[in-house]
Every structure is written in C-alpha cells, then in structure tokens.
Image 1 (cartoon, one colour):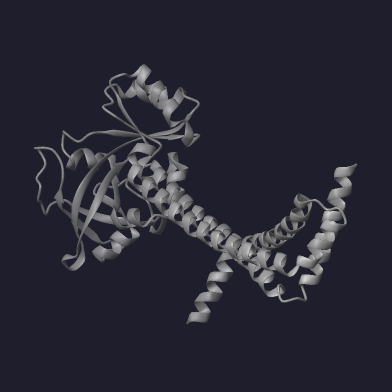
Image 2: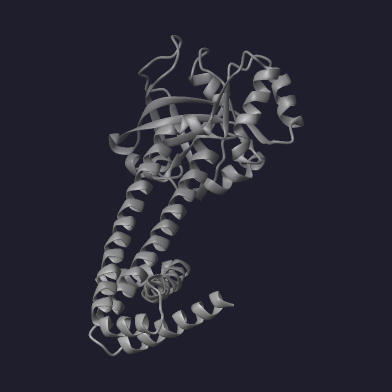
Length: 356
C-alpha cells in the first residue's frame, strides 16, 4: 500500500510540474528534447526500413539468379544426384549450368564484359522464382533455338543491342580446346531481362545448356545450383550431400556472397552508429533540460522534503518527468516513421516534384 501511495503522489506531482512547465521558460527545452527524440526514432525506423527493403531486393535477386542457396560441383553421377535432390523435402529445384567470362561485341563495335551462363532452356518453367526475379521486359526468355541469348538490361544498353540484334562473344574463357578470340560465336538476342540488383543487369547473360557444352569446351565445369525451401537450412543440406556424395564440393550462399554481405553489414553498422549519435545528442539535451528544471524547482523541492518526501522519491518526480518527455517523443517518432514507411513512394514522388 505504501508503494502505491508513494507512486501516486510522485505521479501527481510530476504531472503538475509538467503542466506548469508548458508555460514556463523550460517549455522550449522540453519541446525541443521531445522533438529530437521523435526525429531520431523516425530516422531509425525509416532508415532501417529502406535499408532492409533494398537488402531484401538485392538478396532475392542474388540468390535466385546468381549464387543459388547451394552450389554443388564435381558431380560425377548426375542421375543419382538428381534422384537425391528430387527425394529431398528440403530442396525445391536443382538446376545444372555452365558459366564463363566473355567480352561481348554488339552493334557499332560496342563492347562489354559479361558472365555468360548456360542454363536449361526450360528454366523459367521449372524455377518460378528465377522467372520472377529475372523479369523479361522485351522479347522472351527463349533459348530453344541454337545460338540464342538473353541479356541483362544494362548489358544490352552497353552493347546497343535489342531483341533480334546479334552479339558476338569475341573473347571467351574456357579450356585448351576453346579459342580465346573468335568472331564466329555469334548469338541472336531473344530477350532482355531486369532484376533488382544492378550488377546482374549489367553483367549477366544466358544461353542454352547445349550451346554451353558446344562453346565452353570439354573442361567446362557443370555446376548444380540448388534452391532450398528455407535458405537457413543450407548447412544441413550441405552436410547431407557430403554424407551421401563425399567427393562432391558444396558451397553455401553465405560463403559465395561473403564480400557482398560483409559490405552490407558495415553499411548498416555505420548507419546505426549515426542514429546512436543522434540519440546521444538528444539524451544530453534532456539531461540539461532536467537540470534546468531542478534548478528552477528548488523551492518546490524544499517543500516536498519538508513534507516528508525522501531524496529518492523527489528524484523520482523528475525522472518520471524526463521519461514522459522521452515517451512522447518516441511515440511521435514511431507514428511519423510508420507513416513515412507506408507512404514511401508518395513521399519520394513529392520530394522529386518539389525539387524539379
């Protein structure tokens, strides 16, 4: 009962002080402190939302198009491995492919480096997520005809190529039986795709698995890209493959994209550091505001002490007042942050129109 009674009078006195402070000289300091917290919380929510949104788009494009969840090499018995993947409840799709580096030549001698990946012609049918991430906006992902190729959007722009254009793989990496330079490797562009990751758009191109066997040489390594039901189960699936096929080499998306995810982690940590600095500045402002309020309330503090208020109880009055300022600022920042996140496209459009 005494605790409830003490809490009641502390809350009552703190509330009275807060109402009086709204019309005193401390009102500006308290309002600015609350506003600082609101802006800090809003910045934190919006920045994390935007960062996570960009990362999610990048990660989906990378794992669905580029790295897969697991890459398996040195597959000797393909039939047994395909049977293992089909029976596994954790594996969605197992896609064989070849890849090589190339220097492409397009119209008017335009040149650009590219990673040429040879995939099954029906990959968009068997792998729906691949088709979703590699969104074809011109032509179609058609590799049924020999010497057909699908280019990324930025790669096509660099080569000045469109649907129906011809591009030449002037230089191509491969084994000893592959000519480094040749002007006979001419492909017809059947489609252009766009993904959520710029590096894929500017460097990736796809040909059929049969053309890969033909042009990449006998020493080209066939790699199996595995899509899992849950990307977090990559380690478990890799161990399962190693037990059944000990000679096969597996690489997880975590190690394959270590540099990329390391850069994202550093970027997010720096962003969090900047937001923490904002909160440090706001905390100092609240502290100074509370010191000023305590200085202005010396007479009231003396009265409370004379009426039997203990030192910790009097301190709790001002701590509660500071907590109230912080809570109001955080609540306002939360509302503003969520509003901006849910209306991000409209906000960006408004800013762009205002600048223009």
